[in-house]
Length: 144
Image (cartoon, rainbow, N blue to C red; front, top):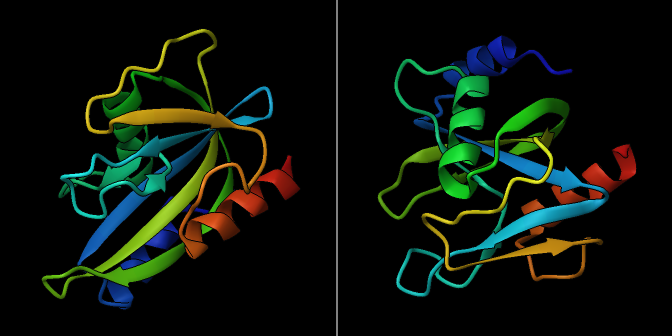
């Protein structure tokens, strides 16, 4: 597994303004995707559960918190690191998203708090994803 402390050090050295974490939640070979509401930034896009790392928070704590907050799912295990990608916000902030494969406690219902829909998909083409997320999802399926 990739060392989260090393990721923190690299992000600091690279001048990342905001770390973001995301999870490829896999249950029996199907992955959970969430759709952003139409009135939100990037409305209608499908994405993985995740979000911003709070000041002073480590990546793994943020990952567990964000998945629970956005889906009601509790992570039972963190698997392989699927990589990162950088993007600039409209305000010009340098963000870096780190993504991991995770498993969750079985049989918990998905409870959405920030998204308007969810979908369990069995392959990387079931829902339209941005190119960076598409690569990470394909990487997840290769690692399974």
